Image (tube, rainbow, N blue to C red; front, side, top):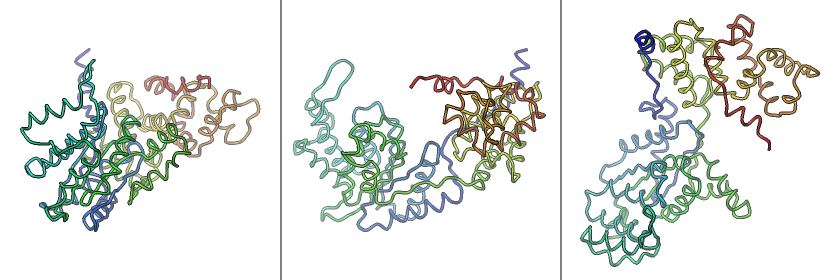
Length: 424
């Protein structure tokens, strides 16, 4: 029995959620334009914001910009620093690991490396760092680092402006002219605790004026705007104005089109190489198919494909209809409230849905649905209605009995149920 089960799932290969090394054509064009902004900026003091939501491709575009920049810039006059803020979210001060990242990239240049270490010491002199259950004085830490590095950093006074001056010397020569462009890519800032992300942005504001230093930040602006509003209120500064003042080039990632999503999805499935991927790819390549209903989000699309593959292989003896399962998974991810309603009102769902679209609500729609604006909005959503009628109900033989086995395999959405029952 165990051997049979293992045999049925041995072909399971997940589509990994990592940035694409071969982005679609539009991303390549964006990368070419934005890398030229950085390469041609005079003076080289540009801050670019790559704005987009969860799974929109911010990291993919930032990697493409860095790759293009390496092609068009002189190696000796360019220093690219990559920094993933989220990996250091446990740190009390995100600026310290950022300095460490800069130091890592230029440690082969001892004269420049010294300035970064000085900047590090200047920063920590004004703070106390906590280790376990006791505190260590920042001055003690400075003394320890001095001894460890066997270098004289006594000129660093710990004042914030000293950090600014020391870091500025990384890009300047003895004549105070720019000798190299330092491009710092900061990713996943919106995945950090909002307070820490905001503190790092505040620290960076001073360094964005350094000649030779340029920054490319990938973030969802809503995360920062929400924190500013909650922390300070709109009287402090309008959240959108805060970001506008910080970024000279605010680039909002466009929402993928149906055509581009088809290209992305068929590309992912083509790389997969399995029989399952081949069959799904054929369906998605057809115009007017299920690809039109996929969420316009690459990360969510990958989740749908991975769940589809897993359920089909785990229950291969049930002879499930792949297209029906895929349509229900799209509902589960793109319209989670509709999926919960589908699970919760199985016997009456057809009638409820038709009543919402015909506007014949009397005695046909339960009161708790009528009184819930979110529920009514999703039931009247034209995209969901078309998907349900065309790809779910018809594939299920126009009866709910054909849908129920799939719902039993897909699981109960406890998070949506909790929101529905929560008393505000």
